[in-house]
Length: 76
Image 1 (spheres, rainbow, N blue to C red):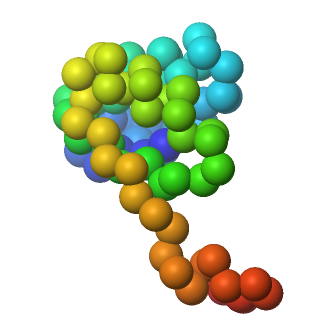
Image 2: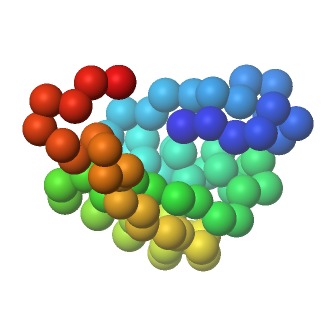
């Protein structure tokens, strides 16, 4: 996860996917003054973090990945 560099001296952090870590992520985002979050919809993996962030009062947007990434065999 990343926030603007002016929001935290360590603006890029990694969080595991267990519930306690997702709550730590939400705590950190609140500490950084974040109010809006965009999540990429990948399978069902977005659901727990979406629910936690929404319950904490964040404005959460679910976005699809770019169409070119969905093409079979597409290369970056």
